[in-house]
Image (cartoon, rainbow, N blue to C red; front, side, top):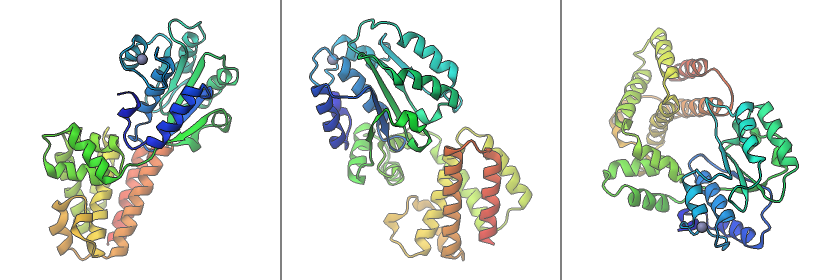
Length: 329
Ligand SMILES: [Zn+2]
């Protein structure tokens, strides 16, 4: 399989393979692109290709190095990812200790940092020290959906590869291949919602609670639209949502709820709507297009704030609900 595992990123794969074959791959590669677009998979394929005994520029999947890297038990691989939203100094220090040893069995030692934008300032400084003076045998692979949050000193040492979105057709094909028995309605919603990011579509397919969650969001959204929810109830709901692990998922569904309303009110065709179960509500409700547009933007901004800053989630959700209520009345 090798790089064929990655679908829809042919141009990137071609560039990476050429660099691997020519031996011109830099010490550090930054894979940047939306969450779920295949950065981690691509990163591990690069780690495999670098260490594969075939040296063909493509992982063979069968040699010991390829297999151990796939299982993440390769002794020359240090894999670091965020714990509780951050990659802390201790994590980088711990990984560096092993990484600075001689090669144990690979051609290259790989330092893999997933979600590199989560590095604390101290952790980034510690990482930078080894990135500044790499030996021939060291390779750094970093992934992030938010490169602008990485220090310029790290960015400047990386070759940057951007993963991108796939067409709805290709996303649909991948989802159907992976979940051949799934209900058509769920596949359609997953593909429409994924925005061409296969990982996002797969996450919806694997989300067993999605029906319950979307039901909850619809109930809450409907009360907001109908105006039969008090400010106290809104604050209480904000507190409950903010405490939940799936808070971002709830916000995304709420955004879809309003976006579907906006599309319907703006006279768009049914097939553009994500969730057709909302149709009857929007047909009857008198809310104007501009208010719905504002609601969508308010939720979008809140999601961005929560995912890209260290904001207090409860305050952000409370503020969002109150703004929405203000636009709807
Ligand atoms: Zn191999």
